[in-house]
Image 1 (tube, rainbow over the protein chains, first blue to last red):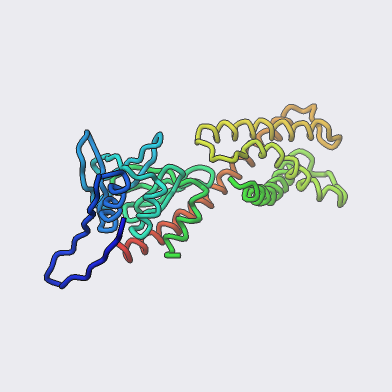
Image 2: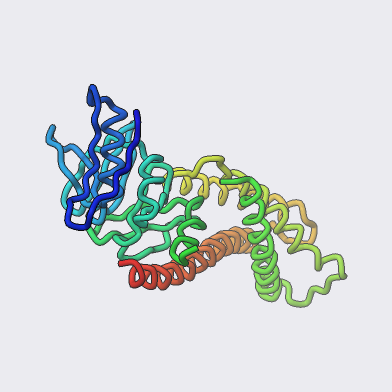
Length: 146
Length: 145
């Protein structure tokens, strides 16, 4: 696939156009990547496709090979793998806090000690998620902006 | 958990146990045998006890992170092994009058108290860390929110 970048004037609307022979998985991934860079993620719930603002996502969890986005009031399945979202959403302040989970640092209300070096993050939605011991160091560094 | 990190934690626990065992020996000794006098070799007793007490703690090691249920189960097993090790040492030591039931019960109770205190200290350490993280979290959210 050839990639062309065309500079346009301020009065024109910016647009990413993908010209393809067939809408393959690869094309969908590119489209999803562009959307995520703009601050939204595609997700499905009850066979319907939704665009979810990244800022609305509290945490992301991988369950049995499927990835789910949790907002305060809904759960959406994402086509992405958790490691892909980890990379993609790092600039949006998402951080891995356990093997199957990423959390939006801006959605954490407080952090509480759990047992044996683990912690619990209380989210603005009221949900509690476990911060694994092996990810605590990375969380501390991220909160300090390192 | 990384085995290296696990060993560092055990080293911290060793020093904590040495201190707590010294306090326990002093208190129990004062209560039951306050006239006894010992040589310099007895200074090593808390260190030996702490070293032996570390062995049962190895049951809590796991490469993957244990669930809360698994961890509580292993901690209970660790406490039983600790009681076993300490009582075995007490029964084989000529200096401890293990024919007195109150002495045996006090030793067993001390192990339980030290176990609970050690876990309380770990909890307090985690609480202090959580407090610091919450302060950093507030700053982070002010900056990026």
